[in-house]
Image (cartoon, rainbow, N blue to C red; front, side, top):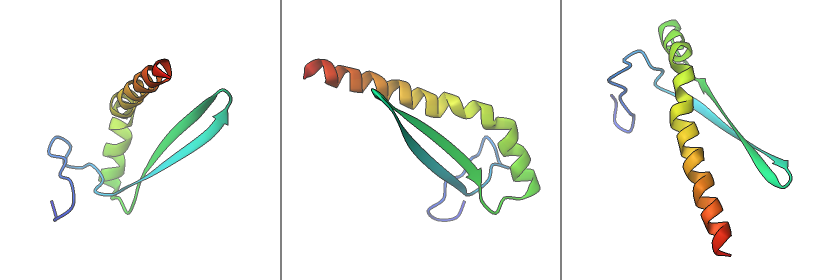
Length: 79
């Protein structure tokens, strides 16, 4: 890996650069959050790897939102 870049040793064909877009939508009384990731300047091999493992991304991002939701609920109870 080059300086400042992550190396994905388990997935050597993983795209080196991803554009991550975060959209917030008011859905009173809550807010919906949508994350989208798109490979940037990826090779055909990197695009295929991204497509193959895309479903697994919910485990990482989804788990983070479950934790964030629990923290926000706890903070709301403390008010």
